[in-house]
Image (cartoon, rainbow, N blue to C red; front, top):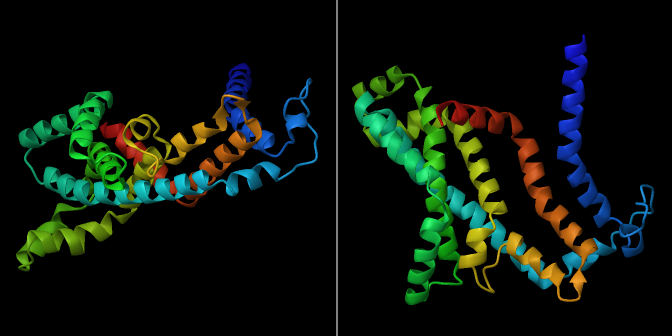
Amino acid sequence: MLKKILFYLILALILFVTLFPLYWVVTTSLKTLRDAFAMPPVWLFAPTLENYGKVLTNPAFIKGFANSMIISITASVLAIAIAAFAAYGIVQQGPERRRSLEGFVLSLRIAPVILFVIPTYYLSMRLGLLNSHGLLIAIYAFINIPFAISLLVTFFEEVPKEMREAGLMDGASELRVFWHIVLPVVRGGLVATFILCVLFTWNEFFIALVLSGRNTQTLPVTITSFLTFQGIEWGALTAAATLIMLPMIILGMLVQGTVVRGMAAGSVKG
């Protein structure tokens, strides 16, 4: 009984530590400047949408939102398309060859981002590619590919080998088997991997800070514009943070079962 009580106390503490910052951000975004800085803190207040109005009429925020959508979705689609072929090929290899390939993919996953960001910045500057959507899409796709391969391998493993062999015996090419037989079976895994890639790209800050320009800034970089020399605009900042979180929370809730399964599968293999 004591263990059970202790378990629930620890669980409640973890939930509080995890959810309180989220609660603070959302409630602050709905407060006036006076309520936001009131001491002691105001727990009951008249909510206002003034901060959201300020953010949604900010052209830089709208542009950052559009950039984040374009870059996150395009880079994730590109990463999934390449990773699906690679993962399918890895699963078809013998044990020794497969171990070697998976080790190579794992080494790409654990490599620090800064290793290639600085060389990429130098090359892009020399080639005049900075401040372009294509550069960020290519970089994020490249970063997501090893992660997507590791995750998709676990889903391709679950496809019965007899299905592939039956397709080949019926005269179908390897590409036809992959497209018409294997991909429909693993579509849940493709969705889970796509969502996780979008989440990573959507929230990423360092690469966007270094490689983006005025026309390609994503939301995590754009939000820093609320940190001014005159002080931090807490109301607008928290409203922007809430708007950044909202699409990913809705997306995650819609596909939570598939995402959890994908993450669990990836953790087993990773």
